[in-house]
Amino acid sequence: MPRCEVLVAGGGPAGVTAAVAAARHGAKTQLIESSGMLGGIWTNGLLPHFIDYQHRGLLRELRRELLLNDAHTSEWRSDIASVADFDPEILKFVLEKMCAEAGVSVQLYSRVSSAHRSSDGSRLETVVTESKSGAQAWQAHTFIDATGDGDVGASAGCAFDIGHPETGQCQPMSMMALLSGYGTPQTPPFSISDWGESKDWLLEEIRRGGHDPSYSRPTMFLVHDGCVIMMANHQYGYSGPDAALIGQATTEGRAEILRIVRALRSLGGRWKNLRLQATSPHIGIRESRRIHGLYRLRKDDLMRGRRFHDGVCTVRFCFDVHALDPHSNKGIDGVEGEVKPYQIPLRSLIARDVSGLMMAGRCISGDFYAHSSYRVTGDAAAIGEAAGITAAHAVSTGQYPHQVNFTEIEDKLPNSVKPEKQDDEG
Image (cartoon, rainbow, N blue to C red; front, top):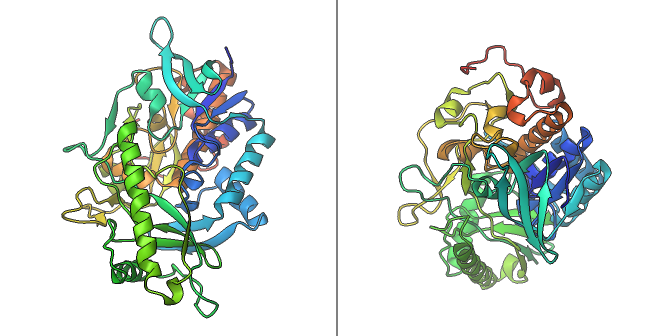
């Protein structure tokens, strides 16, 4: 039975940073990833889109490495976010390099199938994966669930929330597409400097070609000259943990992408050479399980700009709820109230119902509205790094994450900010 000190399930933005951070802080670290690549939504989801990327530490290092590899494609800032885009193929390579140099053991094509507690039920002891090698049982001192869907926590029997608090509906999924042949030598480079206008223009172009897309705020991200990544569809009413529904959403999304490309090509001009090169290997899932932690971030925390004594990073992104009901809205649902810069407390990364389990990324503990803000990849990466550092410290001191004294790790966390005034209860 393979054994490590820290096991990270899921190799997306949160999982990679968690694994690299844990290994760099001295823990023998194993990273398990279900697909054939690292990067999650950045690569497997064809959305190499860093939102809210102002964080220090590994995210800044990753951006610097991507710049050195000529992978940077575009960058812009607004009043709610800092955003950068990168070449997804180079991103795969850079993430693999970071893990290798940190000493992280990586196993791809391996999916978590179950999680098991100790005989007394108090701590998580084993995670089982399925792959071409069959079933493998992995033991560790501390586990980090970075699966996005909260697969480890749910299988371990942890309580969780999913979807809107009144209806259970999850935000729609999106199928990303890589397109070539955009424009002509005389066409100005694609620009997202005016975010709203570019979305409105693209929507009208698709409609002019004869198709009314399922997402009313379609977007293109420049990769290279003539090559763009497009997000232009919504798959409504599907749930992340349901394999049958994910498959249905995937086939429907892929079919609509082809219709959209054909609609644009029919316009001629800048669109006449447009070609669909690839759709994302995995459909983009915005929302799934939120595992219950020692603290549950709430909408009110974001509106107050709440600071915590164990804050691991500061989030600046807005409420971003993609429309739940296409009959009333196919864009972004309005949310009453505005987000002020707020902190993510370490307690939201620590499972409430079992010892030895942390969460990183969008499956941390929060309500529906808080999740819509911190789920973006820049924040997920910062959260992952904090989880990895905490896990390594727990290993080195013989504690479980919930026993770690925050003051002992605070100086190790690159995005921890000591507030002039903390306003949590403890």
